[in-house]
Image (cartoon, rainbow, N blue to C red; front, side, top):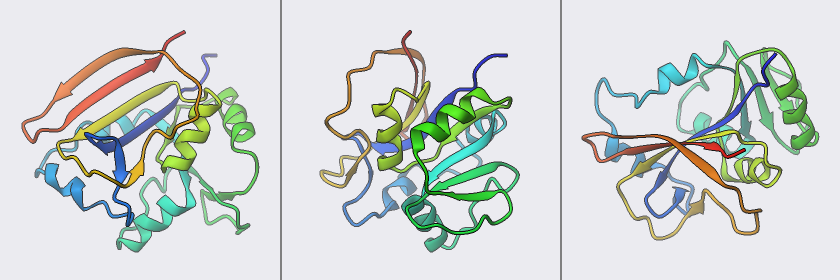
Length: 177
């Protein structure tokens, strides 16, 4: 049995922000192009579990969307206990313990859907195996940084780059062994 990978699939501005300081995501519309999903649908076929922070989950809902991935196990990381809703589990325990356990179970890969707090906790504990980062052609100047200071150094191996006519560049890295 091969261990499942945790994959961070996320977008950020060229200067490293995943949202504005007001937690807005409007800048993502710069690269919206009909018929272009930047490989997302193919990526989603490789996962069966999603980890997402409660603030990110709430943001998606507040934008008027129904959270996708209803066919997957979704762990919403929160400090407030709530009963599960179908495959959506509100998890209040230790994130490192959860991810370590999930990685040892049978299944497809595990998608870290954000936000920055969750991603950085996983990075700090060396639990992200692959990074797929879409860089949006904008300098926001301020906002919510994807990579927080104070985490350990980690070497990565570039697997691929892909550039799109919208200006988006997608970088794919694996954790170096």
